[in-house]
Length: 174
Image (tube, rainbow, N blue to C red; front, side, top):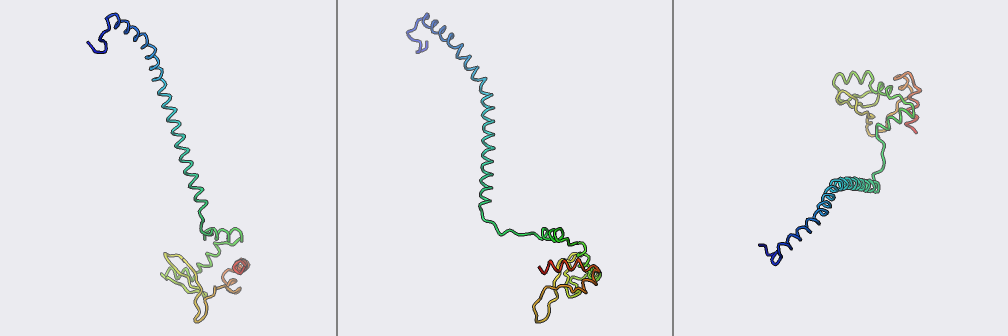
């Protein structure tokens, strides 16, 4: 006999059993109802967690963007590509014509012969990987190295279309 039931008669135990059985039905029903609510609540909790996570990510992203925009930056620049497109499109300079003049028959032949530098018409053409990579004015002894500008006669001899080179010279002089 269990100590919890000492002093109770059989009738008392049976009455208490009936009472516990009567109360257990609604408690079991309540438990089942609550168990049925667990799955939808878990889904709602997961959706809320996902929204909160997405908002935390958005907040972090916004803070980074704000910080980046507040941070002083270097002075804005213009890339060589943008400058070439500007010269070509705004000033109407034909870059292909300029390329043909840089890659004259003299320069082209020197490249074919394996030259690394070609001196032609007062300019040094530096060659690398079968391409002209830069052009500099020939340095004069004892004097400053000034930018080389073609004379009108040189421009006419090179192109036969001096108007285009006059425009280039005007832009360069401006």
